[in-house]
Image (cartoon, rainbow, N blue to C red; front, top):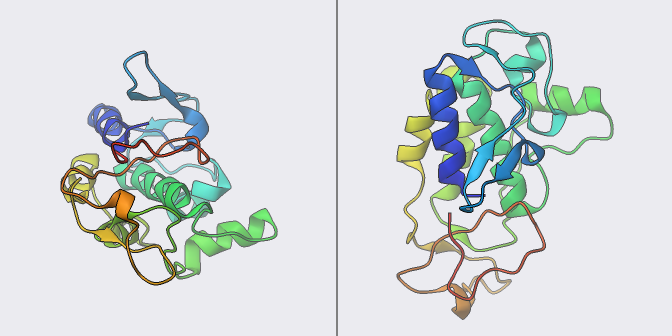
Length: 193
């Protein structure tokens, strides 16, 4: 799905005062036009409500773990955790049991970003901002996250062992694809958001 569509959809939900509370790949659908659509608002709540811990542990925001008040920043944490997994192949935190995973979201520092696909250099700071432990340190609104999203033709972060960007991924028109299918080949025209 297009990350831009996800952020725009969240912007609409947040504008209506709703927090989804369970952003994850399984809750993103693709419409006939290829756009991402948010699904499963079953645990959605009003902004500023305190929720009992709920959501998918791999992507859960620290305030959901604590049962504290939620807001748009809660969903944006989950979006960034999901994007982290899309570009690295693993979520930001991997632990042996759910309790340890939830604790990691609350207290552990993020590991180094190790993308398995070429990504814009500025994607890592964007992800780290969205994955801050304190909600006040994250993007406040989906529009903020969208505005801060790295430009589609940004310089790429090297992934090759020698530090070179593979030739197939260079060029002014390059963009980044964050698709639900981790094993899908990247388009010869370059990936896209």
